[in-house]
Amino acid sequence: MANSYIPLVFVILLAALIPAIFMILSNMLGTKKPSEAKFVPYESGILPSTNANQRFPVKFYLVAVLFLIFDVEAVFLFPWAVRFRELGMFGFGEMIVFLAVLVLGLVYAWRRGALKWD
Image 1: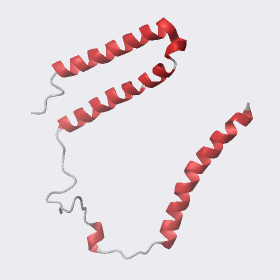
Image 2 (image 1 turned 135 degrees about the vertical axis):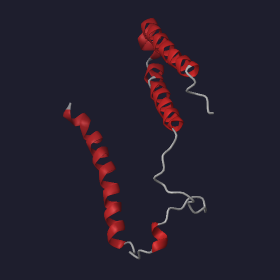
Image 3 (image 1 turned 30 degrees about the horizontal axis):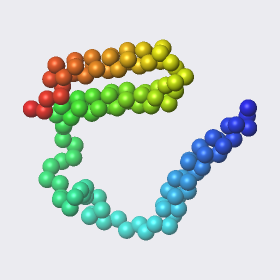
Image 4 (image 1 turned 30 degrees about the vertical axis):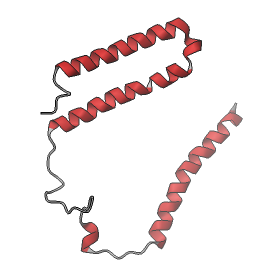
């Protein structure tokens, strides 16, 4: 049983080791010429006109939370689809209940005006 975890441990160690090596090499070998221009935020060739620490309207956070909720819930559909035949009608019924709760949440958010962008 322990032999079956050896490839997993190897992949986890490799996934941690490679970025660590690249970060160390970049820090050791990279040129260090700090200047004022390197500390200015830059996006799309446009210099910022306002401070980056300004407040965002709540609607941005609301949309982000709704996206996360429905995106994470949609991830649960994949394992069900993979094991659809083994689960049979019980699994199908459970997924119908799950999707019904998801749709009710969407309808609730829609009726409360969470999806309106005014």
